[in-house]
Image (cartoon, rainbow, N blue to C red; front, side, top):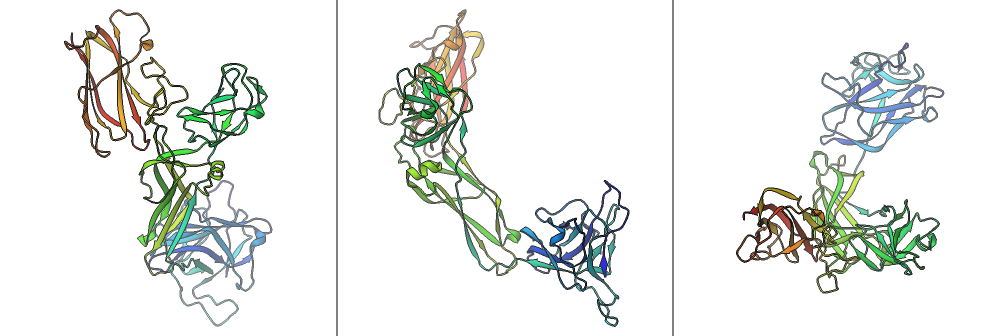
Length: 530
């Protein structure tokens, strides 16, 4: 017997499409790959849509929600009809859909044109197709037909089923490996006028923080137009070789000289970049139905170099053990490179994540799987250096060194500056207390400034002054040990400060290995009385 939709459905009226419920006969569930349906007739133009739905308590298909990834639409021309119910039309899902054991599901059939599609089915006690003697005597499998309607719920035909086939995936191997490679990294949009030029010099400084480059790397510039500061766009755009770096940017030679010492370039300028990192977290959509499998992750990573460090950039750290959805902290910086620098340094892929997933059961119907549409990699990098005005071991010289005593422009990358605090009563000293994790090769420098009572100058233009810790507590062992730091500034017989009613404190954090940084907690500043 063939079944179709009812007449008289109005525009914008909710419709429950025809549905057939079923249960998969596998103890661990299975991945449904496609459904075969037998059509007697079809529309000349309108397509047919099949989708999977959960069956709710009471045995009725969910009238609103479709199981994600299970909707398939086929054009009328791809639907095969048969007068003898001998030929099926298969609706294949883009990805296998896992269905749980013992749970009832339904597939629905929907077309926006009524009474054109008819599908084959059978009813208990009806004659078999083509026979006048053989009858259908029982339902062969759990489930039944729900005809389309416009009500608030489905009404089941308990003695009727469609003719259909369910196809499930079969897994032939117990262990598989998927490898993920870093994609080429997106360009950064630079600030307006990102170039700094010096009159009669071809050296250009680019303001581009977190660029990830090393000296001699390649950077690719786009977006410069016309002639700017006497330099043609062709001498700024394109591939450039990095000659100096720091945390704020880098330098390269433009091939022709600037006419003035200014910031220039305009807007809409982009530059390639790399991602330097110290913490890595893979986020891979791993689905493990019935806990039948396990996932093991490792990374083949490319090393980088801290600004003040002695590490070797562009080496390889192989087989780093990783945990899905958890941070792994590295002992030295690494980098995800752009394609140009991978070619320059003869590195095939700078970041390779290997995912080995294993099926621990003997069943062929179910296995763990990875969802490639839900796979990403989080990379976290610390921003820290250890600056000096001249090149010495254990320090880096930035593109423009500014001492941290400067009122506003100290050039160190990592610092914490308190708010300016105004006191109700005058003070002649400060007591600064905090706990800190200061491992080798890190350090912390403390600076302060005060404003005398009645002083009418701009406090923000007052220089900072370096302070010395009362007693060095020594280096921390490991990342969890915190030691107590105490600074006494003024308010003693030996050292006094002029009376003040405003103060501010700055903590500068230094490291020659950006993967190991100082950590500070419980900062307290006490104003000492006169």
